[in-house]
Amino acid sequence: MNIFLHELKAYRNSTIIWTISYIALIVIFLSMYSSFSQDAEGLVKILGNYPEAIRNAFGINIDNLVSIEGFYSFPLSFITLCAAIQAMNLGTSIVSKEVREKTADFLLTKPVTRSQILTAKLLGAFVSLVMTNILYFAGASLMAFQVKTDDFSLKIFFLLSLTIFFVQLIFMALGIIISVMVKKLKMVLAVSLPVVFAFYFVGAFFDTTGEEVKRYFTPFKYFDTAYIMKHAGYEASFLIAGAVIIFLAIGASYFVYARKDIHAV
Amino acid sequence: MNVIEINNLTKTYGKARGISDVSFNVEEGEIFGFIGPNGAGKSTTIRTLLSLIYPTSGSATIFGKDCIKDAPEIKKHIGYLPSEVFYYDNMKVKDLLKYSASFYKKDCSQRIKELAEIMDLDLNKKIDDLSLGNKKKVGIVQGLLHSPKLIILDEPTSGLDPLMQQKFFELLEEENKKGATILFSSHILTEVQRLCNRVAIIKEGKIVTVEKISTLKENTYKKFKIETKAPLDPNYFNITGVNKLEVKDNITSFLYRGNINLVMKKIAEMEIVNLWIEEPDLEEIFMHYYEKEA
Image (cartoon, rainbow over all chains, first blue to last red; front, side, top):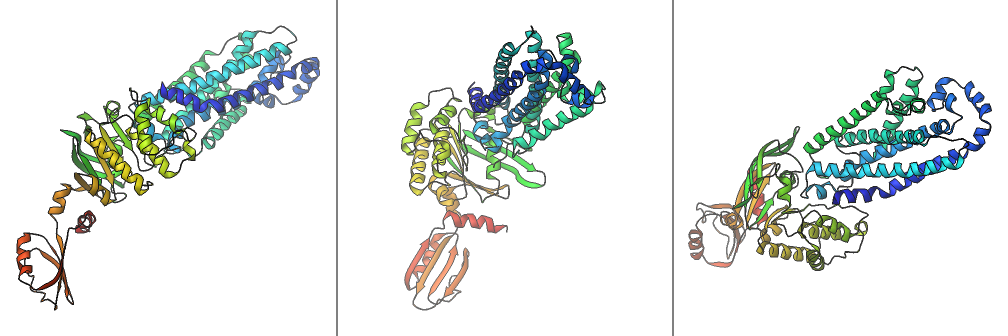
């Protein structure tokens, strides 16, 4: 419990900054909705002239664009990208920061097992992400109510927002497994940025071919906003894929971390 | 009773040397010195005892329990002070110590106050703002605040001024009197000589000898220096046990190991101006072990 609280405190500032950034982003985007919805038809026409590949890469879905949910999926892809970076940073740093800041000796000579340490740290990161998403959703939905022109489904709005959290969990798990595998990680961003962007661009690129199987390669494509809006639910196969990745990465992290030599600095 | 038992502990890092076949015991209530130059394997041994790294082969027990399998249980009663201390920079000393204490299920606040007073440590400062010596003091308080039964020190005195070093040693002796066993690793021999009952000497990853400090000294030579009126015949001290005889004008010097009476009789028969007999200090003994095989 003490490690968990310590960790939570350590992430507090960065969590707050990320959360405020997301809320600011979504407030700015949604505030454009009312003027957008008035000119919607013209814009749809313009956007329709863009190649489909580019529209897909940016998460623009012509059919749904006019509704607030459809409009929302456009900023959502940017926010998901940022959120993935946040989660990956968090995951990568929970183990590596003890090594980098040379505090591993302190923590690991205390009467706790390595699994207990990892569990506490994981929980700390998890709760930070949960807090981020709760605050973000509160901010985003409040804003949506302010700007809506028609009735909209809060459920779908919620389901769309929740994809941020799922993507975050996947990237956090990836961050953890990388950080326990690497001997010493000098800079968290040097790992998280390339990995997240690689997956993001892979997603944008693969999507152009439209093959279903290729969507498994990048977590950014696990949640298709058009599908969610249409079915008010997620695609089970991709939910399972995400869960498997998280499960394997975290399981392997426990295994590796428990057997890892912690070298003197 | 042995507090620490190390049996054929081996740790290899790929091709690089770690430690091989290290075995020694530390008895309850003693201050045990662990000496060797940098890179000899002191830290590797200690880090294995603390299960920070895992042995390639061999085993070790602390309080009769396996140091890997029962690590969390053992660590309740271990205080560890590494040679370089690093803590969470943005924390206050007070909070760091509280955090450290929170791992042991007892109230340590009184002890923290006492220790901070002895070590003259300001609890309200941020760790970030502390000098190296002051960080070390945090380390000392942090290592002792839960009144551990076994104190493991890995070259602990670096960064401490002589006055603080003195206080620190007194603190250790006090803990020792209260029943704590101490494993003290160092490459500074005078501090080992001052504190320890027994020592293990490690060289290139292998234990060279484990001895009482007193025996270590007995078993080695004494240094003789004799001043005479006229240069001495070099053959005069041609008895077994005499080494490195040097006659330089009126000064004769040699090393002697053996029955002290024999050499004293020889000296008594001579007309001498002055005489010095010196105990070798640990440093020389140490060099002796190191040169023997070199």
